[in-house]
Length: 413
Image (tube, rainbow, N blue to C red):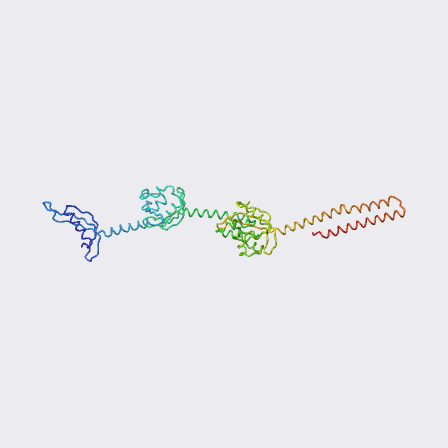
């Protein structure tokens, strides 16, 4: 009944018995009749005669197959629970902690010796009434697994938690997600900042701000505002001055395709005489982080037309690069209209001056000559001379009126 690999073990046992030693609970293996192995606990005691001489031995073998299998299963379970990446603990129906793995020690800063065998809510009194408390009780009472996120203020940590009820109690798996939550918060702040900047750049954003804030992704918010703007807009690299993005209004207004824009710099749409002014503006306003009215500049279209534009800019970060977003409002027609109005006003002022000064001179002479004819008696020769003077003054007045009429016809209303 002794396996071949255990023969030496039996020799050691006999040697100890001969020496008068007792062997208690020695775990070993023996063979059944069918040749299968059985785990046993062996207790061996020496048998002595009346003279105290050892004449034999008494052996008691107890089958420990099930016990050993149970211990091995428990060891396997513990090995698994200690090797998983998640923190884990288990409680029984009375909320006594029955297991607390190494990751739980690390995540919550509580050693096994401090919590295993203790009431969970006695150790964590500050969590009574928390979301975790409510969810654990719901899982225990309903027998339904729960999954949730919770913030633990004493450690300033966020956790992702899954709890599974069983007949023995509750098994809880959890992990620290504080870094993920911090990243989500930063992304949310960046999105809100991008929306704010875009809204300030375009007056149309004030009407669409409520809808833009409801969009889930910042890229969609930026794209919607940028591309639907009726004013030409572009994003330029502050270091290379390369166009990084342009909207449809810019493509339509300047005549370049999107591909052409992406191969150009901001200098390519400036007349030579404007490039020095542009470089100075970039140097002076490189670090401005607010909306700035850069002033009025000359731009050149693809067809060679030069236009006057009013520029609004703001510095942003675009795809990891320091960039500047620009709005170009073409005010060429407005300025031409203002020039035309000023020219018209000059002509009107000239007409008014002629009416008040040039017309007055011949008219005053006519009035004086008429008065002279009425007040005195004159010879026929004198009257003839006076009438000649009146006729000359009348002709002069007629020329002045004709000149005024000609100038008036040139004024556009």
